[in-house]
Length: 410
Image (cartoon, rainbow, N blue to C red; front, side, top):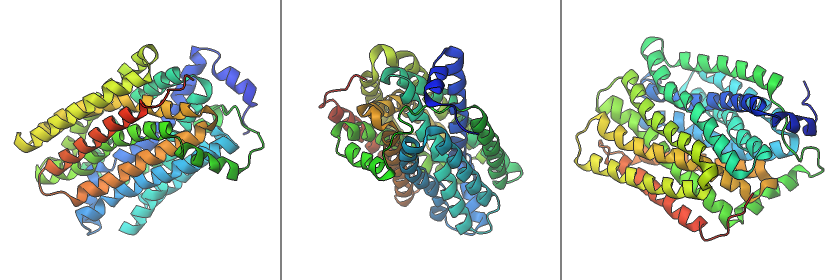
């Protein structure tokens, strides 16, 4: 089914709150499936290590492979959506996600599982990058940040529920059932996109070639303001990826808590992120995205410092990890939507490429820290806490770097 003409589609998409609500709902559902895939397997990492007779460090690749693919895929989907349109690019990406999920479901070896997770992650990235571009196609920066916060706030239900769902399935029928659930969800989302998602790219059909679109990345990499905003997002999200990279082993193996209980603790962390996004949705248009980033990065450093103090001097119990991390993820909710939309707004004509490049940097850093936290683990939560603090400080420094440059009003 072909997309409607671009001019009619854009006018239709912004005609009223009901139309806008429908568009946001589609973006929420499509993005949530990818986020669900990232987190649903966390409670199963120790079990996967046992099932395939591999080490805990090797089992960590199940998360790392997904994150690196999530990063790489965004580079491709960003320029592809600028060239070929948001709608067809998202459909192709979700089909790739379904193929990877099927391989994970049938994984006959650990290597096959890692390959499936990589393909799955590559497909999952499509909705994340294109959703950002779609919102920037239709709205100015502050409104786009507000709407993206609503999307993220509603979408956070997926990462809130994912570890709990994964933990429950792990304790009853095993981790392959989680993959089967994702495969079913992917099929339903593909049908929804085909039937309901409009095309929003205002530059669709222009004569620029794909190599010319690829030059967009060189332009963005040469922009210190864009790179500062991208660094804010990357290091802010690195606080979360560091935590999820190390906390399953600490909670389940060292503290002796079950996968189901771990999933419930993760819900608290995700709920704090949801609260931060709710505040962003309400305040971004009033006080601006830079103010949201200023407050958020400062709060992130405070929460990370508390996490370090608890790791050094607090009791070795889940609450000592998850309570201060709630402060960190609350601050993430204040920062992420503003950092993303500010980066895209540096060059609105390169919205797809900007969304893709910022997402690539975000999840590349995320993948690297999940590897690093596994390597430095010493049987305590101290290395994890110190890495979270380091990422928070780097995010604050990136914010101060961004303030050195004039902020485009778009």
